[in-house]
Length: 361
Image 1 (cartoon, rainbow, N blue to C red):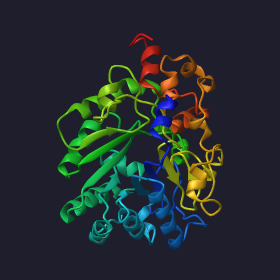
Image 2: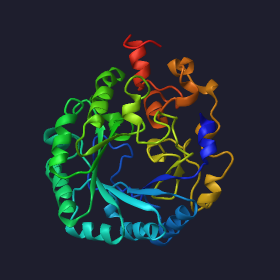
Image 3: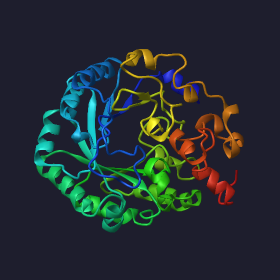
Protein backbone atom coordinates (compact mmCIF):
# COMPACT_ATOMS: atom_id res chain seq x y z
CA UNK A 1 0.00 0.00 0.00
CA UNK A 2 3.01 2.30 0.08
CA UNK A 3 2.48 2.42 -3.70
CA UNK A 4 -0.91 4.06 -3.05
CA UNK A 5 0.78 6.90 -1.13
CA UNK A 6 3.41 7.16 -3.85
CA UNK A 7 0.67 7.64 -6.44
CA UNK A 8 -0.93 10.34 -4.30
CA UNK A 9 2.47 12.01 -4.14
CA UNK A 10 4.77 12.75 -1.24
CA UNK A 11 4.10 16.23 0.09
CA UNK A 12 3.73 17.55 3.66
CA UNK A 13 -0.04 17.70 3.69
CA UNK A 14 -0.26 17.86 7.50
CA UNK A 15 2.48 19.50 9.56
CA UNK A 16 2.89 19.74 13.32
CA UNK A 17 5.37 22.45 14.27
CA UNK A 18 6.89 22.65 17.75
CA UNK A 19 7.46 26.41 17.95
CA UNK A 20 9.18 26.16 21.33
CA UNK A 21 9.92 23.46 23.86
CA UNK A 22 9.26 25.95 26.68
CA UNK A 23 6.21 25.03 28.75
CA UNK A 24 4.50 26.26 31.90
CA UNK A 25 3.50 22.72 32.93
CA UNK A 26 5.39 19.48 33.52
CA UNK A 27 2.81 16.89 32.49
CA UNK A 28 3.29 13.26 33.48
CA UNK A 29 2.53 12.05 29.95
CA UNK A 30 4.57 14.55 27.91
CA UNK A 31 6.39 12.65 25.19
CA UNK A 32 8.81 15.50 24.45
CA UNK A 33 9.67 16.22 28.10
CA UNK A 34 8.81 19.88 27.51
CA UNK A 35 9.64 22.57 30.04
CA UNK A 36 12.77 24.48 29.12
CA UNK A 37 13.21 26.10 25.73
CA UNK A 38 15.95 24.60 23.56
CA UNK A 39 19.16 26.60 23.53
CA UNK A 40 19.13 26.83 19.73
CA UNK A 41 15.50 27.53 18.84
CA UNK A 42 14.75 29.22 15.53
CA UNK A 43 14.72 33.00 15.47
CA UNK A 44 11.63 34.84 14.28
CA UNK A 45 13.22 35.51 10.89
CA UNK A 46 14.16 31.85 10.50
CA UNK A 47 10.68 30.71 11.51
CA UNK A 48 9.00 33.02 9.01
CA UNK A 49 11.29 31.67 6.30
CA UNK A 50 10.29 28.11 7.27
CA UNK A 51 6.64 29.17 6.96
CA UNK A 52 7.35 30.33 3.40
CA UNK A 53 9.07 27.03 2.62
CA UNK A 54 6.10 25.05 3.92
CA UNK A 55 3.68 27.00 1.75
CA UNK A 56 5.92 26.57 -1.29
CA UNK A 57 6.13 22.82 -0.73
CA UNK A 58 2.33 22.49 -0.69
CA UNK A 59 1.53 22.15 3.01
CA UNK A 60 -2.24 22.18 3.49
CA UNK A 61 -2.57 22.31 7.26
CA UNK A 62 -0.14 23.34 10.00
CA UNK A 63 -0.69 22.83 13.72
CA UNK A 64 1.29 25.20 15.93
CA UNK A 65 2.42 23.19 18.91
CA UNK A 66 5.01 23.03 21.68
CA UNK A 67 5.88 22.87 24.55
CA UNK A 68 3.35 25.62 25.02
CA UNK A 69 3.24 27.48 21.68
CA UNK A 70 1.92 30.73 23.14
CA UNK A 71 5.26 31.06 24.95
CA UNK A 72 6.87 31.62 21.55
CA UNK A 73 7.01 35.39 20.96
CA UNK A 74 6.18 34.95 17.28
CA UNK A 75 3.46 32.26 17.26
CA UNK A 76 0.79 34.53 15.78
CA UNK A 77 3.19 36.00 13.21
CA UNK A 78 4.05 32.51 11.95
CA UNK A 79 0.35 31.70 11.85
CA UNK A 80 -0.45 34.79 9.79
CA UNK A 81 2.47 34.18 7.44
CA UNK A 82 1.03 30.76 6.69
CA UNK A 83 -2.64 31.73 6.39
CA UNK A 84 -1.74 34.64 4.10
CA UNK A 85 -0.43 31.98 1.69
CA UNK A 86 -3.54 29.81 1.87
CA UNK A 87 -2.38 27.30 4.49
CA UNK A 88 -4.93 26.25 7.09
CA UNK A 89 -3.57 26.78 10.60
CA UNK A 90 -4.65 25.86 14.10
CA UNK A 91 -2.94 25.90 17.47
CA UNK A 92 -2.87 23.38 20.31
CA UNK A 93 -2.33 24.75 23.82
CA UNK A 94 -2.56 23.51 27.39
CA UNK A 95 -4.87 26.45 28.08
CA UNK A 96 -3.16 27.36 31.34
CA UNK A 97 -2.69 31.04 30.58
CA UNK A 98 -4.99 31.48 27.57
CA UNK A 99 -6.57 34.93 27.58
CA UNK A 100 -8.92 37.12 25.55
CA UNK A 101 -5.79 38.58 23.93
CA UNK A 102 -4.70 35.15 22.71
CA UNK A 103 -8.14 34.68 21.16
CA UNK A 104 -7.85 38.05 19.45
CA UNK A 105 -4.35 37.25 18.17
CA UNK A 106 -5.44 33.87 16.83
CA UNK A 107 -8.38 35.36 14.94
CA UNK A 108 -6.28 38.22 13.57
CA UNK A 109 -3.75 35.67 12.31
CA UNK A 110 -6.51 33.76 10.51
CA UNK A 111 -6.29 30.60 12.60
CA UNK A 112 -9.29 28.35 12.08
CA UNK A 113 -9.41 27.04 15.64
CA UNK A 114 -7.66 26.59 18.96
CA UNK A 115 -7.36 23.14 20.48
CA UNK A 116 -6.78 22.44 24.15
CA UNK A 117 -5.71 19.25 25.88
CA UNK A 118 -8.04 17.50 28.31
CA UNK A 119 -6.69 14.38 30.01
CA UNK A 120 -9.76 13.29 31.94
CA UNK A 121 -12.28 14.57 34.43
CA UNK A 122 -11.05 16.97 37.09
CA UNK A 123 -9.24 14.60 39.46
CA UNK A 124 -7.46 12.76 36.65
CA UNK A 125 -6.62 15.84 34.58
CA UNK A 126 -5.14 17.65 37.57
CA UNK A 127 -3.21 14.56 38.63
CA UNK A 128 -1.59 14.29 35.21
CA UNK A 129 -0.92 18.01 34.82
CA UNK A 130 -1.24 20.24 37.90
CA UNK A 131 -3.91 21.05 40.46
CA UNK A 132 -6.14 23.75 39.07
CA UNK A 133 -5.30 23.09 35.44
CA UNK A 134 -8.69 21.44 34.79
CA UNK A 135 -10.48 24.69 35.60
CA UNK A 136 -7.96 26.60 33.47
CA UNK A 137 -8.53 24.51 30.37
CA UNK A 138 -12.31 24.79 30.70
CA UNK A 139 -11.82 28.53 31.04
CA UNK A 140 -9.82 28.52 27.80
CA UNK A 141 -12.65 26.79 25.96
CA UNK A 142 -15.09 29.38 27.30
CA UNK A 143 -12.82 32.32 26.48
CA UNK A 144 -12.57 31.23 22.85
CA UNK A 145 -16.28 30.57 22.66
CA UNK A 146 -17.02 34.08 23.92
CA UNK A 147 -14.55 35.52 21.43
CA UNK A 148 -15.94 33.63 18.44
CA UNK A 149 -12.97 31.30 17.89
CA UNK A 150 -13.93 27.63 17.26
CA UNK A 151 -12.39 25.13 19.66
CA UNK A 152 -11.24 21.55 19.51
CA UNK A 153 -9.89 19.13 22.10
CA UNK A 154 -7.12 16.54 22.10
CA UNK A 155 -7.07 13.75 24.70
CA UNK A 156 -4.71 10.85 25.23
CA UNK A 157 -6.34 7.65 26.48
CA UNK A 158 -4.70 6.26 29.59
CA UNK A 159 -5.46 3.89 32.46
CA UNK A 160 -7.09 6.67 34.48
CA UNK A 161 -9.53 7.99 31.88
CA UNK A 162 -10.37 5.08 29.57
CA UNK A 163 -13.66 4.39 31.39
CA UNK A 164 -14.79 8.04 31.36
CA UNK A 165 -14.74 8.93 27.66
CA UNK A 166 -18.50 9.37 27.45
CA UNK A 167 -18.56 11.74 30.45
CA UNK A 168 -15.64 13.68 28.98
CA UNK A 169 -17.58 14.14 25.77
CA UNK A 170 -20.59 15.47 27.65
CA UNK A 171 -18.31 17.96 29.43
CA UNK A 172 -16.82 19.16 26.17
CA UNK A 173 -20.29 19.47 24.65
CA UNK A 174 -21.31 21.73 27.52
CA UNK A 175 -18.39 24.03 26.73
CA UNK A 176 -19.16 24.27 23.01
CA UNK A 177 -16.23 22.23 21.71
CA UNK A 178 -16.66 21.34 18.04
CA UNK A 179 -14.26 18.40 17.56
CA UNK A 180 -12.37 15.96 19.75
CA UNK A 181 -9.35 13.86 18.81
CA UNK A 182 -8.66 10.71 20.80
CA UNK A 183 -5.24 9.08 20.74
CA UNK A 184 -3.57 6.31 22.70
CA UNK A 185 -1.05 7.45 25.30
CA UNK A 186 2.36 5.90 24.60
CA UNK A 187 5.22 5.20 27.04
CA UNK A 188 7.53 7.86 25.60
CA UNK A 189 9.20 10.77 27.36
CA UNK A 190 7.65 11.50 30.76
CA UNK A 191 5.02 8.82 30.28
CA UNK A 192 7.77 6.20 30.10
CA UNK A 193 8.50 7.21 33.70
CA UNK A 194 4.82 6.94 34.69
CA UNK A 195 3.87 3.43 33.64
CA UNK A 196 0.75 3.52 35.83
CA UNK A 197 -0.81 5.66 33.09
CA UNK A 198 -0.05 3.30 30.20
CA UNK A 199 -2.81 1.09 28.83
CA UNK A 200 -2.15 -2.52 27.82
CA UNK A 201 -3.08 -4.07 24.46
CA UNK A 202 -6.09 -5.89 25.92
CA UNK A 203 -7.63 -2.50 26.78
CA UNK A 204 -8.24 -2.04 23.05
CA UNK A 205 -11.10 -4.53 23.29
CA UNK A 206 -12.91 -1.85 25.31
CA UNK A 207 -11.41 1.31 23.81
CA UNK A 208 -11.96 0.65 20.10
CA UNK A 209 -15.68 -0.24 20.36
CA UNK A 210 -16.20 2.78 22.63
CA UNK A 211 -14.48 5.16 20.22
CA UNK A 212 -16.58 3.71 17.40
CA UNK A 213 -19.75 4.22 19.44
CA UNK A 214 -18.83 7.83 20.22
CA UNK A 215 -18.09 8.50 16.56
CA UNK A 216 -21.44 7.06 15.50
CA UNK A 217 -23.42 9.31 17.84
CA UNK A 218 -25.03 12.39 16.32
CA UNK A 219 -23.62 14.68 18.96
CA UNK A 220 -20.94 17.33 19.42
CA UNK A 221 -18.07 17.38 19.68
CA UNK A 222 -17.39 15.27 16.59
CA UNK A 223 -15.01 12.47 17.55
CA UNK A 224 -11.93 11.66 15.49
CA UNK A 225 -9.60 8.73 16.09
CA UNK A 226 -5.90 9.51 15.84
CA UNK A 227 -3.66 7.40 13.65
CA UNK A 228 -2.64 5.11 16.52
CA UNK A 229 -6.22 3.93 17.19
CA UNK A 230 -7.42 0.84 15.27
CA UNK A 231 -6.88 -1.17 13.08
CA UNK A 232 -9.23 -3.31 10.98
CA UNK A 233 -11.87 -5.60 12.41
CA UNK A 234 -15.57 -4.81 12.63
CA UNK A 235 -15.10 -1.22 13.86
CA UNK A 236 -12.59 -0.04 11.26
CA UNK A 237 -15.02 1.71 8.90
CA UNK A 238 -16.78 3.53 11.75
CA UNK A 239 -13.49 4.69 13.25
CA UNK A 240 -11.66 5.61 10.04
CA UNK A 241 -14.35 6.80 7.62
CA UNK A 242 -14.26 10.55 7.01
CA UNK A 243 -16.13 10.49 3.73
CA UNK A 244 -13.12 9.69 1.56
CA UNK A 245 -13.02 6.95 -1.07
CA UNK A 246 -10.67 4.92 1.13
CA UNK A 247 -12.18 4.41 4.58
CA UNK A 248 -9.64 2.08 6.13
CA UNK A 249 -6.14 2.42 7.53
CA UNK A 250 -3.50 2.65 4.80
CA UNK A 251 -0.43 2.83 7.00
CA UNK A 252 1.65 5.44 8.75
CA UNK A 253 2.05 8.59 6.63
CA UNK A 254 5.05 10.03 8.48
CA UNK A 255 7.45 11.37 5.87
CA UNK A 256 4.89 10.70 3.13
CA UNK A 257 2.12 13.20 3.85
CA UNK A 258 2.97 14.13 7.45
CA UNK A 259 5.86 16.24 8.72
CA UNK A 260 7.13 17.28 12.15
CA UNK A 261 9.34 20.31 12.84
CA UNK A 262 11.21 20.74 16.11
CA UNK A 263 11.84 24.21 17.50
CA UNK A 264 15.52 24.14 16.53
CA UNK A 265 14.74 23.24 12.91
CA UNK A 266 15.18 19.48 13.11
CA UNK A 267 12.90 17.59 10.73
CA UNK A 268 11.07 14.34 11.48
CA UNK A 269 8.37 12.45 9.64
CA UNK A 270 6.11 12.93 12.66
CA UNK A 271 6.68 15.26 15.60
CA UNK A 272 5.77 12.49 18.07
CA UNK A 273 8.71 10.32 17.00
CA UNK A 274 11.56 10.42 19.55
CA UNK A 275 14.62 12.62 19.14
CA UNK A 276 17.67 13.85 21.02
CA UNK A 277 15.77 14.63 24.22
CA UNK A 278 15.05 10.92 24.49
CA UNK A 279 18.54 9.91 23.33
CA UNK A 280 17.34 8.98 19.83
CA UNK A 281 18.47 10.34 16.49
CA UNK A 282 17.35 7.71 13.99
CA UNK A 283 14.23 9.70 13.02
CA UNK A 284 16.04 13.03 12.54
CA UNK A 285 16.21 13.67 8.79
CA UNK A 286 18.24 16.88 8.96
CA UNK A 287 18.15 20.48 10.11
CA UNK A 288 16.71 23.49 8.32
CA UNK A 289 19.81 25.53 9.07
CA UNK A 290 21.86 23.07 7.04
CA UNK A 291 19.49 22.26 4.17
CA UNK A 292 16.25 23.68 2.87
CA UNK A 293 12.99 21.92 3.60
CA UNK A 294 12.67 20.96 -0.06
CA UNK A 295 16.15 19.40 -0.03
CA UNK A 296 15.36 17.37 3.08
CA UNK A 297 11.88 16.34 1.92
CA UNK A 298 13.04 15.33 -1.56
CA UNK A 299 16.13 13.44 -0.41
CA UNK A 300 15.93 9.91 -1.85
CA UNK A 301 17.18 8.46 1.43
CA UNK A 302 14.90 10.43 3.76
CA UNK A 303 12.09 8.83 5.80
CA UNK A 304 13.27 5.41 4.66
CA UNK A 305 11.34 3.55 7.37
CA UNK A 306 8.17 4.40 5.46
CA UNK A 307 9.18 5.34 1.92
CA UNK A 308 11.36 2.25 1.43
CA UNK A 309 9.17 -0.17 3.33
CA UNK A 310 9.04 -3.85 2.43
CA UNK A 311 6.85 -6.43 4.22
CA UNK A 312 9.98 -8.42 5.11
CA UNK A 313 10.84 -5.74 7.67
CA UNK A 314 7.81 -6.59 9.80
CA UNK A 315 8.27 -8.66 12.96
CA UNK A 316 6.10 -10.67 15.36
CA UNK A 317 2.38 -10.87 14.60
CA UNK A 318 2.77 -8.00 12.14
CA UNK A 319 5.06 -10.18 10.01
CA UNK A 320 2.33 -12.76 9.37
CA UNK A 321 -0.76 -10.53 9.46
CA UNK A 322 -3.07 -10.65 6.42
CA UNK A 323 -3.06 -6.82 6.32
CA UNK A 324 0.69 -6.32 6.73
CA UNK A 325 1.44 -4.86 3.30
CA UNK A 326 -1.35 -2.30 3.79
CA UNK A 327 -0.88 -1.50 7.46
CA UNK A 328 2.96 -1.56 7.56
CA UNK A 329 2.91 -2.03 11.34
CA UNK A 330 0.49 0.77 12.20
CA UNK A 331 1.63 3.96 13.90
CA UNK A 332 5.43 4.27 13.85
CA UNK A 333 5.52 6.15 17.17
CA UNK A 334 3.34 3.59 18.97
CA UNK A 335 5.27 0.60 17.67
CA UNK A 336 8.65 2.11 18.49
CA UNK A 337 7.69 3.38 21.95
CA UNK A 338 6.34 -0.03 23.04
CA UNK A 339 8.78 -2.44 21.41
CA UNK A 340 11.75 -0.40 20.18
CA UNK A 341 10.88 -1.71 16.72
CA UNK A 342 8.94 0.48 14.32
CA UNK A 343 7.76 -2.74 12.59
CA UNK A 344 6.24 -4.63 15.54
CA UNK A 345 3.12 -3.04 16.99
CA UNK A 346 1.18 -4.79 19.79
CA UNK A 347 -1.41 -1.97 19.96
CA UNK A 348 -3.57 -3.14 17.07
CA UNK A 349 -7.23 -4.01 17.60
CA UNK A 350 -7.16 -6.76 14.97
CA UNK A 351 -4.07 -8.36 16.55
CA UNK A 352 -5.50 -8.24 20.07
CA UNK A 353 -8.91 -9.52 18.95
CA UNK A 354 -7.35 -12.43 17.04
CA UNK A 355 -5.11 -13.36 19.95
CA UNK A 356 -8.10 -13.18 22.32
CA UNK A 357 -10.22 -15.36 20.03
CA UNK A 358 -12.76 -12.56 19.49
CA UNK A 359 -12.40 -12.65 15.69
CA UNK A 360 -10.99 -15.17 13.22
CA UNK A 361 -7.55 -14.43 11.73
